[in-house]
Image 1 (tube, rainbow, N blue to C red):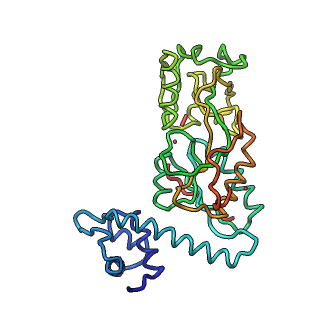
Image 2: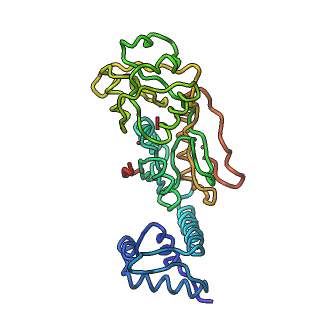
Amino acid sequence: MADVTLRQLELFAALPNFATLSAAAAHLHISESALSQAITSLERTVGEQLCVRRKARGLTLTPTGQQFAKHARQIVVDTQELVLGSRQGPALRGPVKLGCYSSFATHVLPELLEGFPREHPEVQIEITVGTNEELIAALQAGHLDVALVYDVSLPLGYHRQEIYATELEAHLHQDHPLASAETVDISDLAGDPYIQFAATPGTLNVIDAFTARSLEPQIKARVTQISLVEALVGRGLGYGLLMSRPNASHSSVEGRPVIIRPLDPPITVTHVVGIWPEDLVLSKRAAALLDFAAMRFGGFGRSAANVDPVPPGEPKASCATTVSPASAEG
């Protein structure tokens, strides 16, 4: 049987990320003909077609090709970890590709990017900020090691580690009749104008919460930026319902006060978690970053219980920085 090179595996592992062979070749800095030859050589070795290449329809991996690409990616990652581990000694060294859900990124990432490099200066953190859909797609494609998301409506097939507890809170103008109350019942808000933060999964969660009480919110505006929700609340144009966040400010971007009150009875109580695919082993660097996040934020919120402990044999989660936006909860 012909030998398979690590370079061939690297090339094929990247194919699921591209719609055409030419796009893949350009990204991989290789000629299209050389990439095509590498694929053909792999197919001969495997004895089965791994992808369909049509100029009019682009590049499509066969079911076998999809599995081959997934295993190839793991082999490449394991090889990189082997090389890094053999030369790093006790210190952690190398990249961590971290995704973060956009609605709480501002409240979490600055502390991580400031604090973690102090403990592990030779780890390079690359950040992608996006929606649930974008981050999960990036995890599946191998663009991310781990992602911080809400533990809501997640697909199967992911390990998870809790970072902090969070729940829906009312954001009120300082002159709102309920601003001086210790807690707020959503039934007391149902008749007021509501500034809706329109992003999954938060939008559906809020509507479900009202429906469960046989109520309907009076939506005045739908916006896709939390800062805009708080700016409108700060001007007295309505109230907002947003998930609690560490390091949250009690004023809008315009400097106007925003009064934040817990809901009683509480609704949409959940957690921010770090997730990664079940079929991939978390690197020691990524595990250390998750542990650091849990240590910094684990005391925030109402509870702090671990979710889905890491299976035996996998590292438990205990800098140069690149930030790339991918894209907005409740």
